[in-house]
Structure formats: structure tokens, C-alpha cells
Length: 114
Ligand SMILES: [Zn+2]
Ligand SMILES: [Zn+2]
Image (tube, rainbow, N blue to C red):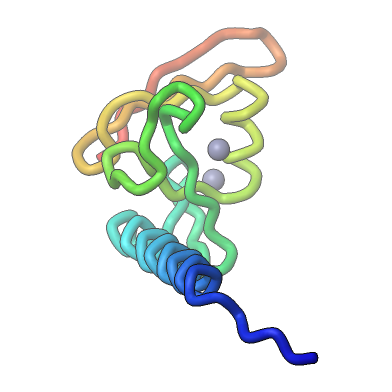
């Protein structure tokens, strides 16, 4: 027997769809702001290939949909951030600072990025 989906379920699905669409637009917004490049190494990225990293993770109260908390990175630099050999601070809408640790000697140097 055919069971008509309850309106409640339809609504939930619609909310999920809208949420995905919003998330997709937001990715594009960040990628455009960063001129389609990794903010750490300047590598040119397609929208599909871009990683959007949250400076302050959601688990620590950061917003996944606030442009000041999100930054475009390439896969390699994103990896370095999560391995803590690259640290990023500041507001990506303005200026950020990159702290790069040289894996050979363990020294960290700071670089500004507009
Ligand atoms: Zn990069
Ligand atoms: Zn990340």
C-alpha cells in the first residue's frame, strides 16, 4: 500500500536541500573573495578543487557560514594546517598572518597575506 509522505518529512527534506544550496553558495563566495586561489601558496584552484577551511572549528564555536572564519586553501596547504605545520590567524576578509614551520629545522616564520 502506498504511504503518502507526511508533510513534516517533506518539509525536513526541503530544509536540508536549502541548507546544501546555501552551503554551496557560501563556498563560491569564499572562493571568489580569495580570487580562486589558495591563500597560503597562491595556487589557482577550481571551485570544485578548493578546500574551504574554518579558522575556528565549529566545535570551538566558529561559524561555518561566516566569511571572516573561512578561507580558501589547496589540499596540500589544508593538510599542513591540520598537521600544525601551518597556522593561520587574522580575518580572511582583510589580512591574515601565516606561520610556517620548516620541517627540516623546526623554525617558524611569519608571513603576511592580504
Ligand atoms: Zn596552497
Ligand atoms: Zn580545515
